[in-house]
Image 1 (tube, helix red, strand yellow):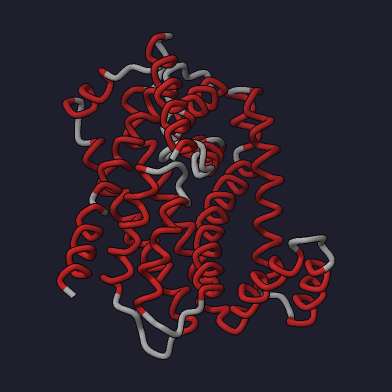
Image 2 (cartoon, one colour):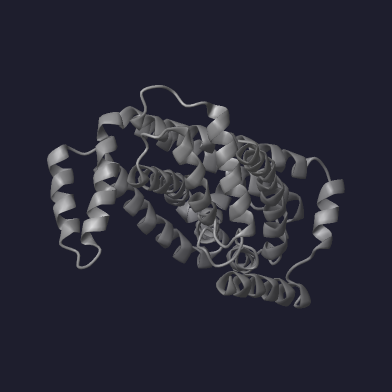
Amino acid sequence: MIKTLLKFLLAIGLIYWLASSGKLDFSLVKKSLTAGPQMWIGLLLMFIQILLCGYRYKLLLETKTKKPLRFFDILRLNYIGLFFSSVLPGAVTGDLIKLGYIKKLNPDFSKTFLITITLLDRIMGVTGLLFLAGSTSLIYYSEVTALSPKLSHVIVLNLILFSGAAFFLTMLISPRKLQLNLLHLFRLIPFIGKKIENIFAQVFALRENRKDVLKSFVISVVAQFISVFAFWTVASPFLDHPLPFQYAFTFIPIGMITTAIPVSPGGLGVGHVLFANLFLLAGISNGASLFNLYYLCALINNAVGVIPYLLISREKLEA
C-alpha cells in the first residue's frame, strides 16, 4: 500500500512539474475533441488492438486445451487486466490479477503454465513492437537521422533490442536439441537457474505448436502497428511540425515499452516525461501533451474493464 501510494505521488508530482513548466497543456484535450474525428478514430483503433490481443492470448492458452475457449470469456478477463493496469502501477500488474480468473476457465491449466503463457503473451507484444521499431529503423535510417541526428542513439537501441527479439523467436522454433542445451545453461545460473529453466521449458514446449506461435507473432505486429497508428492519429493535428507516420516507429515503440515498467499506473507521469524527451529528439516540444491524448484514449478503453470485473464479482456473490 505504501509503495503504491508513493508511486501515485511520484506520478502526480511529475504531472504537476510538467504542467507548471509549460510542457503539459491540458487544454489540448478539449481542442482534440473539437478539431476533428482523430480522438474517436484513436479510441476505435485501440479497441481493435484490444480485440487482437485478446485473440492472441486465446490462441496461446489453447495450446494446452482439448476444446476451444470462448473468445468472449478471454476478452472480458483481458479487460479486467487492462483496468487494473490503469489503476495500479505498471502495465503488467493487471496480468497478476487476471491470472486468478483465467484458472477457472480450465482446471487443467497449471499455475506454471498460466504464468508462462501470460509472460509469453507480453513478450510477444513487446516483440511485435521491437520488430516494427527495428525494421523501420533499418529502412529509414538515413531519412530519420537527417531529420534529427539525435535520434541515431534511439535507432541503435532499436536495432540491439530487435536482435534480441529475433534471437528469442529463433530459439522458440529451433530444434529440440538446441533448446535443451540452452535449458542446461539456464540451470547453471546461481539461485534462480532452476526457476528460469522451468519457465523456459514451458515456453520451448510450444515448439510443437509452431504454427500458433508464429500466428501470435503476426497478430502482435498488426496489433502494435495499430497502437502506434492510434498514437500518431490523435497526435498528428497538434505536432509542432509535420512528422511522417513511418518515422514515428523509430521512437514511439521504445516509449510504449518503457511505460510497462511498474513505476506508475499505466505510465502516468513517467510516460509523460519520457515522451516529452523522445519527441524533443525529433524537434517536437509538446511530447508530454501528445502522450496525454494517447493516455486518455487508453484510459477510456481500459476503464471498460470495470464492467466485467463487477459482473464477475456479482456472479461470485450469487453463487
